[in-house]
Length: 107
Image (cartoon, rainbow, N blue to C red; front, side, top):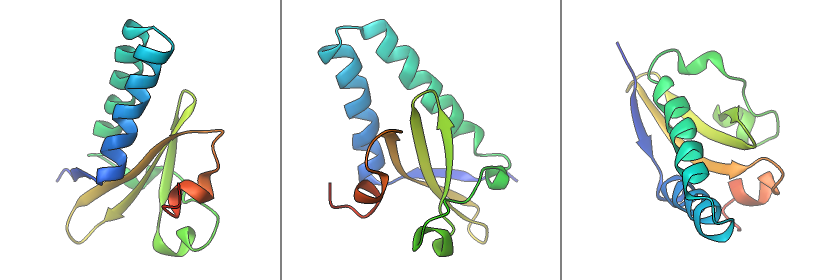
């Protein structure tokens, strides 16, 4: 059985921000679309075998079961609920950002 993919509001906004930055600030709309497509393709691949990616090693995230997967220069953070068969996309962020700050919601 496939897992259902759900997004937090922060993750949805992250994807919009990534697209907008590349498209508008960098003036590369085609590259923005391709980047967004690659991110979305990886997220949709989590429908099958979402536990295949590593747990984030820092606490309190490790104890909560937060997983992450890289795609290009970005990291996708997500939680798996095996009982409900859901994958919740928590955040999508540039890999060189202050990850702890963004995961804690203090950004």
